[in-house]
Image (cartoon, rainbow, N blue to C red):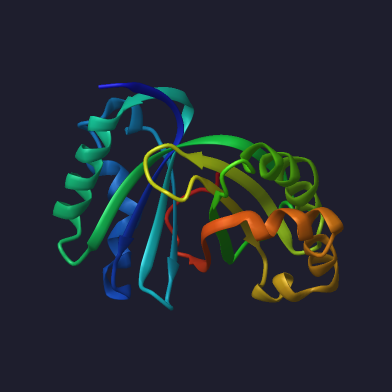
Length: 207
């Protein structure tokens, strides 16, 4: 099995609200994978789709095999028999910066996932990491902005923002960043795009 340096393992699942209480203890069940035994755990849930995104952040980037993901999925399925669509992925971090409201509580987690159109991967990466992500991080109400590459499941790019309120998305500074000339050139070349607003599911310390 190919090894891949991994910063975060992301577990996606459809999970009903009444099963969320056990999510905070999921790390305790990962003893079969030593690299994940001390992972920092953050969980986010979308009421619109009953979707859970569970981030297992490794203390340092570590090599994981694709077989490790199958073990994570099996453990999650046993731990949460109510879950469906369980999918684990290895993520590598390509951008991470504290936002204008760092230190404040972030009750919401906004995620944009996309595959770049053929021939646009480098341009979209430059736009994301030199203009778009830094710009949105500077908006009041944004606590942190990060972007990852998903090496196991499409979409490839996962950009996420910890926000104090949902209204940050519609604020004048946020919209100004979204509406630059470069944004207008890059965004039409997104494919398979998913945009999801999550609430914090209360699963331990922050990344």
